[in-house]
Image: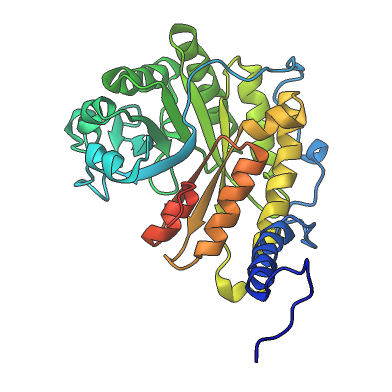
Length: 336
């Protein structure tokens, strides 16, 4: 016997579907509630140590140099020499790539891929023209967690500037990423900043600094590094937050803790750059660093994509382990 339904009452299947949809939206929105996280760097920024410069930089508008957007695929070209840039761009729709890692060679001032491979002998980077013909583009990634950073290894200011110019000119790039793992190396901070300021006088180069994200945002040394880089006249297009994703065994609230850390970094960058909150969000990129391919679930990826869109972040990316294909699609904003 069919159940009686009062006039004006929607059918039960419709009610069930609506409830499921509301639950899904609520599940994503709950991620943005404040997290009860204990700061790793509890010292105030003013206690980070003596400033290298007492100059107070003027507020900086959003830079005009072109830069990546949406999703940026990082490629370790030494570890993956067979990576096909044009084919991947056509298959996935990814437009932007960051090619690493450019490190110091044995002499200290000569740039080499992975610290060993000469600039012109990189089969992945040499496919850049094909990528551009397919409608994509790529930048170079300097530095990283392994090997010697050029700015640290090369003590000669002119030689360092020449090394950067050599790589940038050889591949005709408009975007360069600098993954800085030791923002407290003050001589290297100064040399890198001066070199970038010199390069940007000659060309429109969109510069990204990639720095680790901690529970309380950026480490004091990295905040000071950004200040000093600006004070030297270099223009920073984007700050890429390298966020180590907690494994699922870490328990409830792992994504809320990530959101709280990003919000903390946003506050720091608003102050460092002297810009309004909305502009500061557009200067932030977020890279999920994965220890294992399952660290980021499909739901996690959808949350990150939604968060990036909601806050108008510059771009998303991943490092470390390669996530499953459906997770990568979700980070790019695609639906399965």
